[in-house]
Amino acid sequence: MPGTFSQIYIQIVFAVKGRENLLLSEWREDLFKYLSGIILRQGQKSIIVNGVSDHVHAFVGLKPSKSVSDLVRDIKNNSSNHINKNHWVRSRFSWQEGYGAFSYSHSQIEQVYNYILNQEQHHKKRSFKEEYLGLLRKFDIDLNQKNLFDWIE
Image (cartoon, rainbow, N blue to C red; front, side):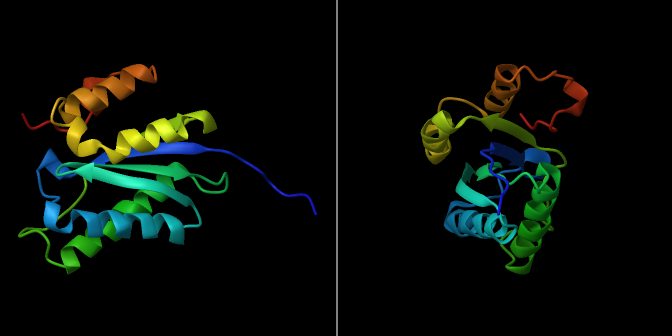
């Protein structure tokens, strides 16, 4: 029987609302495992999920039957509920609206994986704003400043 075959690799980047440093190191690893589980439960391939205190990178093998926007919605909704249920932050936790989604070829998987794996070291040299604007430029995405995240300097 013929099937559908695809290779769609997407790096998804999203931030904590207000870009606050709320993703504390003591529970961040558990959160990233939880995010990976959401991706898997949606029938997608979780290649790596990592980030720092104010944002997350998820590298996903996406099936063509699933839209990126639906996947991100499910990740954000389920994970914010999980964070709030576990009382990992004092106030009500939520993710900032919007996200970045960047596509890669099969030959770039290892490079993107290592980039996401080393987020802590990477952000000792470069802010999230610099990183995110760099990704938008690299992928030739229109930089309409009013549609970007709310940046806290």
